[in-house]
Length: 171
Image (tube, rainbow, N blue to C red; front, top):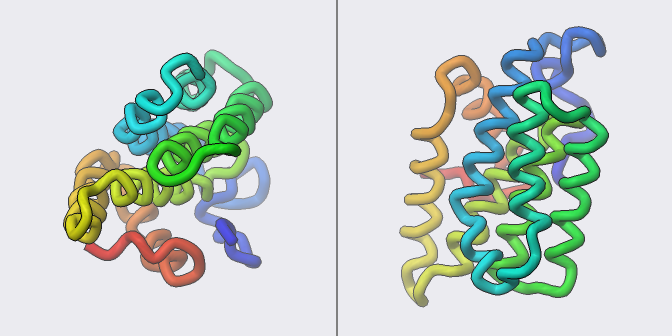
């Protein structure tokens, strides 16, 4: 399960009855894109001719810039996740991270999906015995990328949902 049964109003846009501003929604998408792009080479090494995950990351950024509609970003996210279908390990997780980054345009709470799958990709690519150290390093790197405006929100979301679905966000 990626999303909790009860939606946190801090991740619902104001126009839909929540408290999330459009500016903060865009920052969440940009952060998710950065997390996904950080591990994207793990997918591209396995499938150099498949542009779908990179296109999803680009769509997340373009949505945040107002250049593409939410539906186009969401569709790009679905295509990236489709690229993962027959893969395993790090390349699969990296494609899922890209897909989750693009669908932040649709549901802001997917920001953790992008981050978690990126951590899982880095961990899966680690040498034997280094998985835990790599997980912590990736988590720290992601936290360093967090825009100050949404930092508290994302860190609280990590605490709130880590046990529910990810178990990767302890540093």
